[in-house]
Amino acid sequence: MNALEASAFVKDLGYTLDGAWKVLLAGLILGAGLCAVYAVGIRGMALSAAGSGEAGQGGQGGRQGNAIGYVIAGVCLLIVLYGIVSGIMIVLGSGLGKDVTFDHVIPMFTEKS
Amino acid sequence: MSPETLALVIVVVTALGFDFTNGFHDTGNAMATSIATGALTPRVAVALSAVLNLVGAFLSVEVALTVTNAVIKVQSSDGTPLTEFTGSGADKLLMIILAGLVGGIVWNLLTWLLGLPSSSSHALFGGLIGAAVAGLGFSGVNWVGDGSALDGVVGKVILPAVLSPVVAGAVAALATWLVYRITVGVAERFVRDGFRWGQVGTASLVSLAHGTGDAQKTMGVITLALIASGHWTDTANIPLWVKVVCAVAIASGTWIGGWRIIRTLGKGLVEIDSPQGMAAEASSAVTILASSHLGFALSTTHVATGSILGTGLGRPGAEVRWSVAMRMVTAWVITLPAAAVVGAIMFGVGRLFGDVGGPIVVLAILIALAGFIYARSRHEPVDANNVNDEWDGMPTPSGGTLAGTAGGVA
Image 1 (cartoon, rainbow over the protein chains, first blue to last red):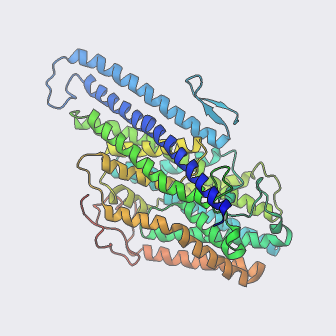
Image 2: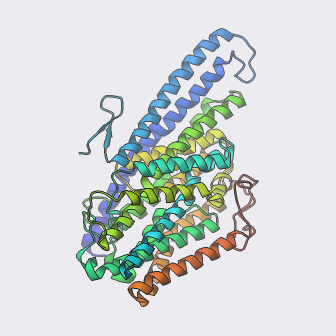
Image 3: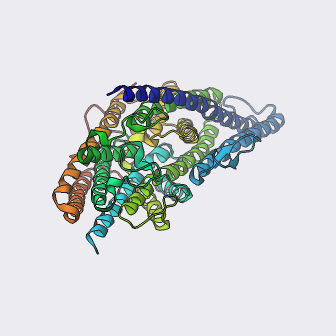
């Protein structure tokens, strides 16, 4: 390997570590994060089933459990749906050759810079 | 039909064959976890994945024509063949492409026979590298790029291969751990059913991303062959028929199922429950999408496998079969050189028989090898009916299972 190749190799290493770090962060926040939100939503669904969703509990606090549970589940579902739609937009974007921006919170296509 | 056209037809048919093997090799990446937990029945899972791969492939409007530039030096930066490969030099380029494809196909088939998930992208690149070395010498390969951006075999193949499973595994481990912590005490039926829906959603996203990303490789290779042989001149677009046949090829391959690999991913590595399944596919989806959004190349197989291993680590008390994992990693490491060897040999053999005879002989050898491998697979077939049976070890080429890869605890 000559000097030029050696320096390109080192640069490649740098680019990769830099990129891997970004992907890891995105994965931890969005991947693990959305899964956690989904799990909270499932807990909400269980809560909404008049208290009988929680293993080992009786039927106390049925009505209250119902309402809060549905709200929690609903909010979580919306968050997860936002994540899924964003994901689909990114897939579409890569196919269509467009970038996806989140400047206005809602994902939108823009031309590639 | 002129000799050049016959060579071209053989290249196109072989490329579609590669696309087909790419399809069934990667079905498991998206669907193995859903099949293993029962979120989807085997046949529905592969049908869904096939449809999404088809849709994804058609979504590839902007196809990277410069697909081979990542690893070998046969194209210029706008996608056209380098001048030494135009005119009378086109046959050499066609043979490099053909030999590369055969290298990729043979490795895909061999790893399929052994039930080993391995990267189809690496198999193709390996084949191309081998053929290029045989035809152009080591300087015909783009090893490290020029340092201005991530490029070359090291930058676009090897480094991503090492890091992407680790990243995906870490994400999946955290996701799994969180999910189990958050749903402690919730009744089994809510957990099981709720996460099954989550599994279907995340697995679908992975299939869509796969169709969009992977069919492009074959589209790019076929278009390059068309340009080299003078049948196409537009470097900004690919012919519609190319897109259609590539989409159909990868979707058909996906639908056939690749059951042996699905079984290894779904049952052989980790015994999976639906929360783990969803965490794994969510991790795969985010890793693949974040990487493609940032412009990085990676293999869906490496990511999916890393995710599944990660869910094994993230769930307290889960069992990971390291013997199977090690066997897989070994396959990954030798994919590039093994496919390269086949590509190099095929190039050498092909050039012995001239511009017409060469492609015909290479195709004949490919068909013979494929037939042999398929026949071996029938000794102990894996299909939709037994893909979820209790794990009893990795398949071997002669039928039966490999000692030391059944059972075992983390």
